[in-house]
Image 1 (cartoon, rainbow, N blue to C red):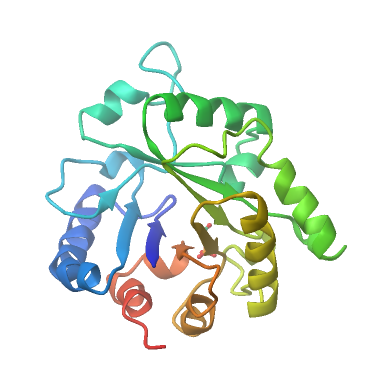
Image 2: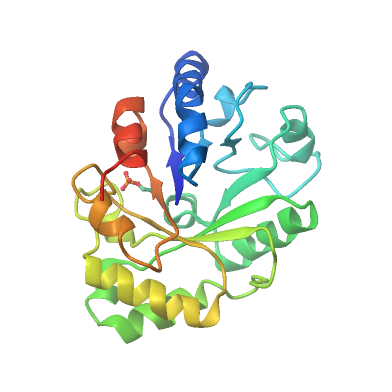
Length: 232
Ligand code: PGA
């Protein structure tokens, strides 16, 4: 299983360092279990950390460098050896207004750079309420312009109505959706949306779930490690 933690706009450089060092202490055991951790801190907390798990970024601009006020490009990421990026998170699509066209442009650029890409998709509640066919149609449209044959990418299915709400999708909804996606996209698929200690065993037991992308429950090392070391 992949356990990915998305800090969003939380944590400082100091608290991120402490957090990563704590995870590092457990990483030997995590790897021995066949699992993998990936952490996405805010950009100001990126550094050359001595950890042997993945530290990635939540966002970057599709450029080496240039005149893009407020953004960072590959030159800034290279300084810290960052080679992993989240693209298409619903908060960037919805709050920051990133269109499918722009998300696809970012994907193509970071693919060209050989980055490992966690590509996020997810439907709003009104689409989920229309039923599973409408959901799959909506999700497949989020692959428009995306080269799904790219080797170095992982999909994260995160229903928007389940993010940060405490209401995760049901086991049946997750299983059905992941199974349908796997028919067209032969990549690892993470589930995200209110993953926590109480539901991790149920979610992790689904065959087509290759890992989880966690916001709220990743913010403290103990709640994150509770997920990583959950008992079936
Ligand atoms: P959540 O966020 O775990 O707080 O619901 C998940 C995400 O947005 O990646």
